[in-house]
Image 1 (cartoon, rainbow, N blue to C red):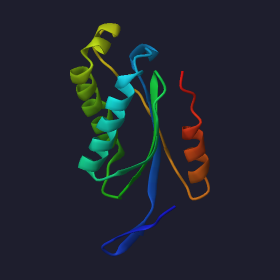
Image 2 (cartoon, rainbow, N blue to C red):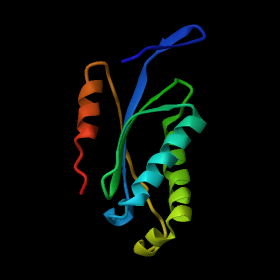
Image 3 (cartoon, rainbow, N blue to C red):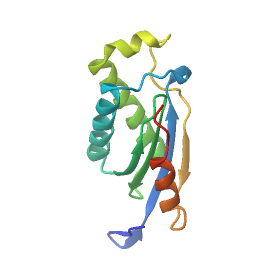
Length: 132
């Protein structure tokens, strides 16, 4: 893990985050995946955190991020899910028709902290997620 420096402190903060599409609908395919990938990278850049690893099977997202102590994880997740849903619905309105209530993401998510000993293991796990 790479340690970063702030004014008077050193940190290394990484989170493994997973969230699913609403009803586990397999709507993340073809051009939708590339639009989502671009959207998530822009959200990360705009919010000043780094995506270290990303996997997008057809019905969920696995992401490993690196952020600063000033980041609040619920805000990061709100940005990732909310902004990406708006981008996807605008670029691919056909996916909205496949969802009953118009929501793209399930409201729940998983988040876990990453340690020096688990970082590489989690990266490999994300890389090996099957594309359905």
